[in-house]
Structures are given as structure tokens and as C-alpha cells.
Image (cartoon, rainbow, N blue to C red):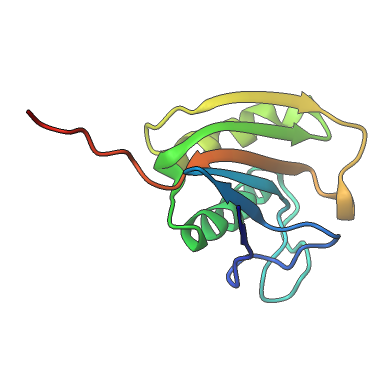
Length: 132
């Protein structure tokens, strides 16, 4: 088991790691729309928050030797399901045709009063097939 903490992502705001890698799988903690440079949420709209969340998630994936194209499953947490179309548009653009499995749930509140949080499971390497 390998602990991943990405220097290009916001510092964890609790006793957890950005991700844990084991047996080629990467379990990423939920990312918030925090600007890594300032440590604050600097964007208000659900689309803009989704963009920052996915940039932070991408930084975690990169630190682990993975990327958005290797994401298997995401869970999206929204404080208002009315934000779904805005989140979904940015999500689709950022994943560029890749369509991982996904669950989206509405929650009462997120840390730092964020509107969006996304966690992911990814692979760190694509297995090579053996030729005969």
C-alpha cells in the first residue's frame, strides 16, 4: 500500500491522504474546489467549482502516475441537485469522451461550504497484453 499526497493539490483538511494506491488501484479522497495556492475556495458557481475540483483531482492522479482517462468510478457530491447540469457539462468536458461509472448524490453540506466534491477510483497503470 502506497500513500499519495500531491504537492499540486490542496492540503488535506483532516487526517487522511489524497489517495491510497494498492495493487494497481488508486482510491482518491474527495476533492473540494479549493485553490491549492491560497487554500481557499475562490469560485462560487457550480461549473467553476467543478472545474477546480477536477483540476485538484487531476493533480492527485498525476502524482500517483495516473490521469483522468484511467478513472474507473467517481462519486459526485452536490449540495443542490439543481447544480447537476452545470457540474455535468464541465465534468463531460474534463473527461474528454472518457465515461467512468458515476454516482451523484445530494448532500446537506460539504466542508468549507463547497457546492461540489468528487472522489474517484482509478488505475495507476494499464496492464500490457502478452502476444503469442
